[in-house]
Image (cartoon, rainbow, N blue to C red; front, side, top):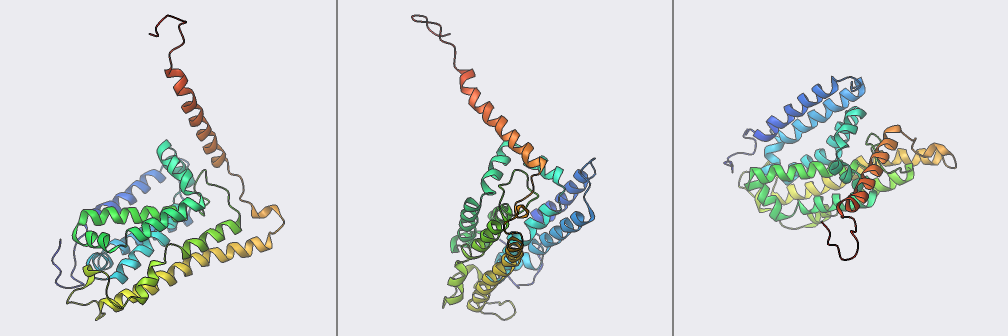
Length: 299
């Protein structure tokens, strides 16, 4: 626990100071391989994702979110869920994404989260569960717990965008209307907690109630502004993506253009999944000894 003397006092976040450069080095090494070179557009998106990571975790936003301001915490989480995941995924060449998601355990998770209903459920549980007063207090008092919670929130951002991002291999094909409807649901369901913050008459988070104030804001005002930011920003970002999809579906109604094109990597991933299912189906039969006949005990 660091000493809380002033909201804008600088502190070093050791984990993310090491993790973010490691991510950049891994990207540079991976994209130097043959067939994995990023386009300029991909490189720009990845760079923007790294910048967003630095803004989210470094001073001053990282310190303010950890100990001082619910408004700062909400801004940090908006970056972790709405900005960073799509930028990193869009900025990563598809061969690398295929390689990263090929392990059976990773692919099993991906196969689940690319479906809209599980994605909404997971994002809602993480968004609400990690913003309970007990969890926020734990994060404020333990740097280890705070990093774990931040990683969980970041992963939930990848889950949020998984049904929409066409770069992910083996995704469930969704029409433009389906993706737009999914984004609209995601903008409404997980953010209902913000309504509580807006209309609460007292500060709900003792972790952010200090004598020193951030920009002179009371904890109640900070909490209300956090509620407005969470609600309006989520709607603004997700609806900005959803409405062009709806417009596209209106233009392409009754044609085949609304359907996502078939990509070989998606077909290849389905073949790999079928092979795994066949291997699991054969495994119990291979482990069962043959019947040696009546009266003869199995060896």
